[in-house]
Amino acid sequence: MSAPVLVIKGLQVSYAGNRAVDLAELTVAPGEVVGVVGANGAGKSTLVNAVSGWSRGAPRVAGQITFAGQRVDAWPTHERVRAGLVLVPEGRVAFGRMTVEDNLSAAFAAAPAPGRRVYSRDEIYELFPRLAERREHLGQQLSGGERQMLGIGRALMMGPSVLLLDEPSIGLAPKMVSQVLETLRALARTGLAILLVEQNVRAAIEVVDRLLLLERGRKILEGPAREVGDDPRIAEAYLGATAA
Ligand SMILES: Nc1ncnc2c1ncn2[C@@H]1O[C@H](COP(=O)(O)OP(=O)(O)O)[C@@H](O)[C@H]1O
Ligand SMILES: [Mg+2]
Image (cartoon, rainbow, N blue to C red; front, side):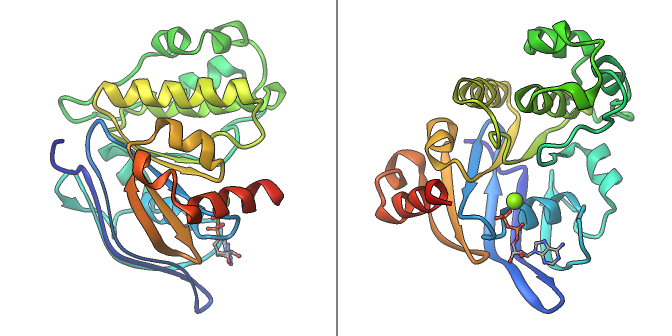
């Protein structure tokens, strides 16, 4: 495995004094898919949002985020994106009133570093033929699965070397879940580093190399997917998520 492209150290994120994430270390290497699982409210979104420098509220973020050898934790989101650290946010279409085609056209990589693969719109249509069929449809008319494909497609056109995904399986039909997650696996084989946040533990375990279990913002378990898959704490998190 090559050296990590994303290294997170001592990350602490709080909302109005309440600690939502407290993570000693998390790394992702090129070609690797790392899964972060945990129940609703465990801090998964807060984590990937902090890494991308984006947030819904006004969290206080402390700690070190090193991306491709550079400290980026003081950088604004757009500069992290330009450097290749790209978040596919939770279940939203960038521009609901724009067509699929225009949504894709609006995504572009500003002067990406050499060696980074920037997908063209046609390559996104090859990767997701369903999007090609829907190219004239408005973003807001898409199904959950199609929205995820559009979000991933837009992200790939920005030339990521690290892709962060926030619950790409949420609201998707089971067949669509495996299709989207298998695509992520295939992208990792091209050298992309992927940090995948999921509440759907069973689906995540099928595609990740390594899995972290978060509980109240802290890592309570980490290991190769094959080994931690049988851990009772993972089963509990899974049952908790299904019961919810
Ligand atoms: N914008 C916000 N303002 C205040 N508290 C928040 C905000 N977003 C999340 N939280 C709190 O932070 C904790 C983690 O939330 P979140 O990261 O959304 O969890 P998950 O994505 O795992 O469901 C929860 O206790 C949640 O209530
Ligand atoms: Mg979330």
